[in-house]
Length: 139
Image 1: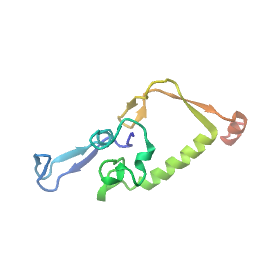
Image 2 (image 1 turned 135 degrees about the vertical axis):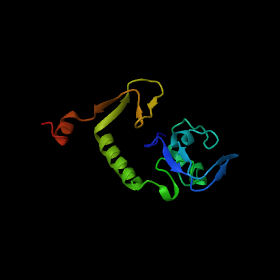
Image 3 (image 1 turned 60 degrees about the horizontal axis):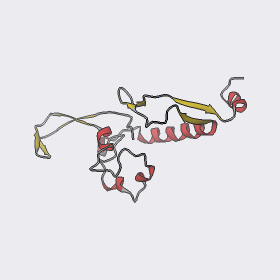
Image 4 (image 1 turned 45 degrees about the vertical axis):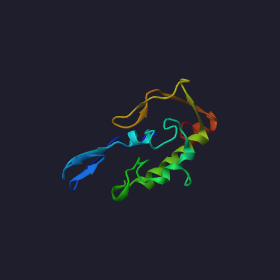
């Protein structure tokens, strides 16, 4: 829902017309994944966190450019697979040892610059404080 990069700058290589607007060659164009990720033209309930929308039979696979947290096409981020692997390892370890508690009952607001992060803090509560302190070297 919150792409790691807020803007993707590109340069036109030739004159191109998009949605009736003409851009000459060598024009700087900025793509905003955060905008497309919340665009109601592309998504049913765009502000709802729904991991199932990314299953192969769902709406995201109908276009390569609806969900673009790492860009798309030939300029897709080289770190895409490493980042996904790193996130899975981090979440696995985090969720084994902590319960994540929101400090508010409201929907989380996000700060998008320079990197996406929640405005509110989250509480982390250890599931097993004795074993946790040993596993992270506190004893």
